[in-house]
Length: 110
Image 1: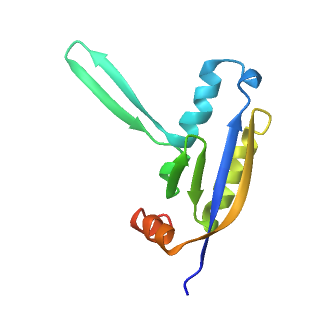
Image 2: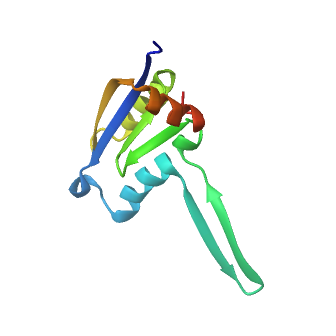
Image 3: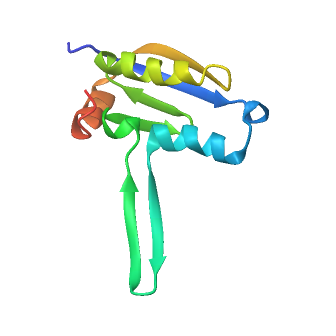
């Protein structure tokens, strides 16, 4: 039987602790990345600005819940620790079913 472990990361932003919506968005953009649209007289351009999860394969479970490989937890923990006053987070080691392993392998997460 194949047993694989992964890490489930759960976080919650404390909106009132952020100085502005811009600062809160900075957290999300730093984690997930974002698309920047620029309109010019000669055309519209769209750029993708990467976030931390572009460097770390992950599987998004919900808005503030994702699964990553155990080997990548140090990067996520370091990022979350920089926001510790404004973002609560929890890390759970999980054991995956064969179906979950297949999904994550197909997405290059584990």
